[in-house]
Length: 149
Image 1 (cartoon, rainbow, N blue to C red):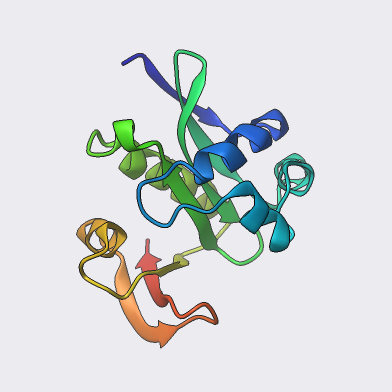
Image 2 (cartoon, rainbow, N blue to C red; image 1 turned 90 degrees about the vertical axis):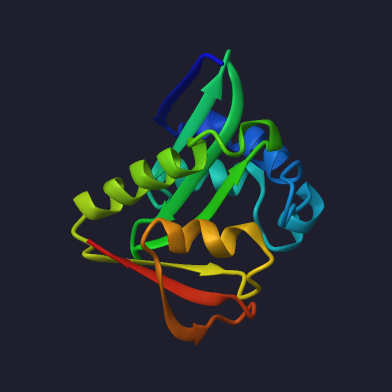
């Protein structure tokens, strides 16, 4: 594994959309993303404008995973990995790097929506890294977790 990490670029958007549909849990297809208004064009524009700061993990020129935040809200909006890269610290690294980008923008608190079911892998993943429940749920029914710096 020749994994490298770097800031996301607008040209990464199309590969991010493809990867999102290949995740083990909570996969979302390109068509489902498009129905939500997320296309390679809108994602690319969000990266270009700085609205969605993010970090990608690349293995031999191929996208292995990524994490993006929201510049104005301090929200982690997505973290996705190819199944072959799970359990190797890739998710933790892209999350940590993206959180740092948001901290540098002045956020002392970050938040995200996460499955409330302990059987779902993300439930334990975020909590293990210090994210805590706010006791609230977002409009999608996900539990809102927060991270304080």
